[in-house]
Picture (cartoon, rainbow over the protein chains, first blue to last red):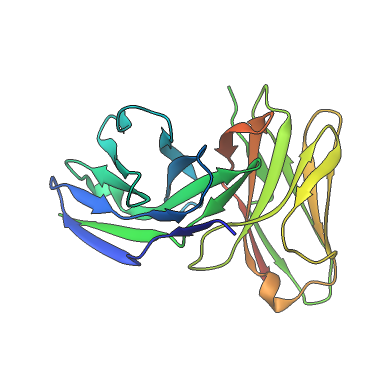
Length: 112
Length: 111
């Protein structure tokens, strides 16, 4: 079975600093992708960034970027210049046959 | 352009009762998936509907059932509610299974 692992239950970062959230995946499927979502206390899953397995470069969307290492099967999210509004739960997820398999999530707290 | 709309936002039910949750997909989307997210956990896939049929199902008992209507909206029904069914229920829509958009969820509390 496919498995997505996020080993950091909680993280703290100072406002304006960068933070890296870890995600590893367990799959032998050569054709895969990975999503990162943000979930504020309101509950909505907000799409942040996507990395396809055949993408030549690491994905970047504004302050969000992915540190994608195929050999290590990791797709870590980097948030640069953290803002107070970045405080939320962050989930890594992999699409498998039309459904998403989620990790356990990381709660990020940004300190002023 | 409206995103995914879920109703109600909050719900309190008594153990043993039945509940119906509703989801309207994003405009242009034809596939609806439902997820259950227990407190402190990642979402778990319940089932997916496409062309008014259940296309695939996760590891959930038959007490969980659903329906998709011709306008692509969907309902999730849970019978014989248990305390353990208390969770945030998320609906996600997509077009032929790609480009997932989530709603804000329905918080179900079973007492």
